[in-house]
Length: 337
Ligand code: PMP
Image (cartoon, rainbow, N blue to C red):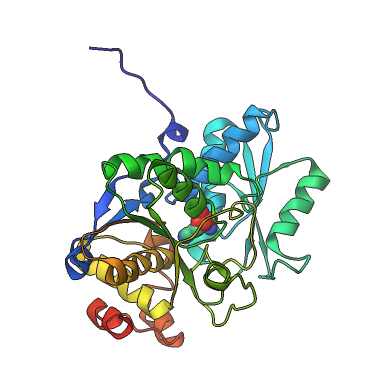
């Protein structure tokens, strides 16, 4: 027997299971498969970007032991940077919009990050969380992770998520579906998959209130009607991670549809995830209904529903926000087919 090799938690980012979503596969006649990213050490898909950004900065000599990493984040990147950062000897300062779920603030503080809550402001406003993080880095000499425009983010998915899906499907994957926050997941994964087989479709599932659906459909960034409660996604500009991304199809998914998927996964598959995962899976189902049957479609379960207990899994909050937890997926997709 060869000598066993042991590693710290930072080496265990990725290599997540690819789970078959049984009922939705049966409903569509396609294989609907989803990467269980909630099983990463920090509990989300953003651990991949965090690890990639930290490794890249180390190789460029930008991070020295004991250094401080600062980042503007909806929460998950901050959690990933803190978990992996602590495993590699760094401190973190996390700038986060006040609108994000209280569970994320609690988790970040428990992990030992310095948390700076800021009012939610658009990118065009100097008070936007990203500009505040950049300003702090410049002022204090900290390392700014810059997940939106640092392409080490996209590269992490090119090196891990893409090859994993290719291998786990034995090269049979026909389409990859993901929502866009920074765009790292969608761009990096599809770049790798298209290099293996150019016919693999890159599919964007966009929430309302974001501009990616219209950007990919008609090149227009102004068409960002509506709103969404999904955290971590909803982009209004072409980030450096999105640049050059070739999209084959984009869908707009409303929160009610995504929520029906979240509850279906919870009650019928034993999978507990947040709303961006619901948007991704809903996008996969829409693509399957339009282009199937017989396709193998992969998507991402971005993070755990535990981060949203006080919102998505709280009857009072749902009622206040006009969302209905009890809708059947057949009903939701039937109407939109
Ligand atoms: N879902 C959640 C819950 C997230 O936190 C993020 C990242 N902000 C995404 C989806 C989108 O991933 P990406 O940044 O790679 O586009």
